[in-house]
Length: 370
Ligand SMILES: Cc1cc2nc3c(=O)[nH]c(=O)nc-3n(C[C@H](O)[C@H](O)[C@H](O)COP(=O)(O)OP(=O)(O)OC[C@H]3O[C@@H](n4cnc5c(N)ncnc54)[C@H](O)[C@@H]3O)c2cc1C
Image (cartoon, rainbow, N blue to C red; front, top):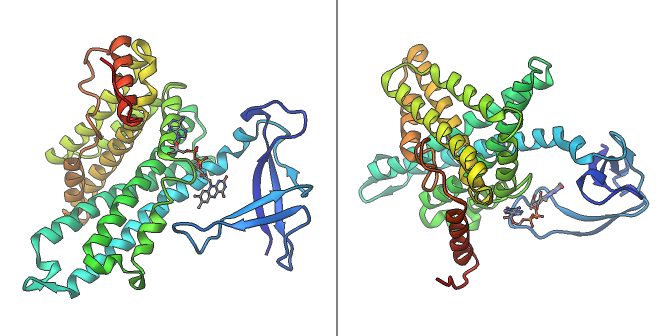
């Protein structure tokens, strides 16, 4: 088995910064399993989770490496791989949530407390239903990213609009599903009571393994800034809004159509916030990036859920998927305070400066002189 790796490195003489990096292919081990010459293993890291996938601190000095796409612009060259790994992250997030729910449901059928199985207790079932709605949202988001990536790889959609959509949807799916997975894992452990906290049940591993999902392949904040940048150019935000509108249009029953409108309004409000803040208070843009990204992601998830709910009602005569959509809508698509109506006044730069100073005082726990 060949152990392959892609890595970025700066060829001698190249300028500082991302553009001076180049993408290299490295074979780490030979057929005998030994590390190739020039590759030193300093240590394996002692990690919170994902322990079955060791993470090593390697030093490459004089290792053989092959330039993959020229000797600069490596960050651009590695981007297609990041689309794959981020999409994979979203799929794993949705899958982990589903696995946890399957375990929790099984436990709820067997564990009797307060006179009956947990599965018969309305509040316990309500709690699992909330996680299930989030899981279905994560599933649809992840596989929307899969669909867009698959189309691009198969050459089935090569328009600038399709490229912009993929560029925006991939980080959105990654960042939103990763956070859903951590929240779900925590709730699932709690649904087992004390057993969820005890190592020999194997359950704590669900939470430990989930916690890496928002960290590797780009943290929530780093991806949110990427989303902000992408949304501001190349008509990406327009393409995204059109996509959400097309998806939501398939939900025609009154309740699901209303859920679709909630999704559209959230996207409109977020885009209006982006336009007016970029114009009037650019300093405040970064601070709102996470809310912006999570709003777009949850709005797309809601539109996808509403469409699925409609399909399932019409074709399968099953109302369960619609219930998931409506429940997810109740959880809210705009985290925090949202962005207010699309025609809200733009904050003046002075207001934005004050808001940033207030956040800095809280975030850094420093006095706020006034
Ligand atoms: C188990 C594991 C395996 C990994 N495997 C690989 C691998 O195979 N290959 C690889 O290349 N990397 C790998 N990584 C690295 C991983 O991708 C990084 O740890 C991750 O992207 C975060 O980068 P960082 O650690 O430098 O954190 P930092 O960039 O220092 O971030 C620290 C905090 O600051 C926030 N932050 C950073 N910049 C900003 C900003 N401008 N605005 C607002 N907030 C910001 C982040 O969101 C984060 O919360 C792995 C990490 C882990 C944990």
